[in-house]
Image (cartoon, rainbow, N blue to C red; front, side, top):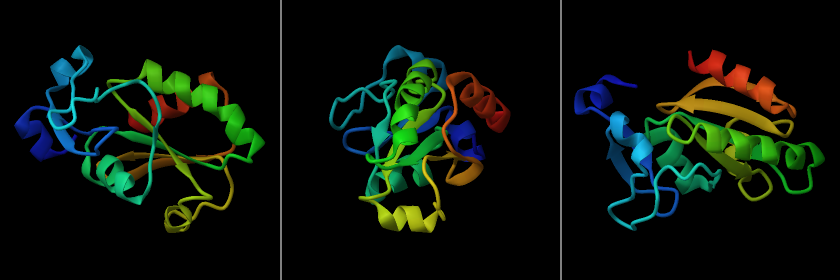
Amino acid sequence: MNAATEAAGGLLVACPQCHSLVRVPEARAGEHPKCPRCKAPLLTGEPVALDAAGFVAHVQRATLPVLVDFWAPWCGPCRMMAPVLDRAAAERATALRVAKVNTDEQQQLAGQFGIRSIPTLILFRGGRELARHSGAVDATTLGRWLDRALA
């Protein structure tokens, strides 16, 4: 968390529906907060599909860490990762946002981050890349990788 967020006493979370930024007190993150603009749940425990505008809101402007899966629908290992990422999103709903970027549809984002193979997972916090992993992993390996990267 950055100093501004700490001073304000909460996380800055992007709404998965309208991409508005909402300040959520950390102590209340588990209370199913809703977006004041569109009334959608903020921390759904489900992966969020991102385009370029959504990427800016969720990754670059929000303070909640975001695990971005760069994937494509034709990729077998990407499809194998989907249930692993769904599980991570559900288990870490109040501590981490899981997002997906379809590299076929968002080629500019894939190029911006030098995605050469998929699936590629990049963990961001406060707009900065913390860690990167290419290739499919199981849930246990993903959990250990996230724990190390977020420590």
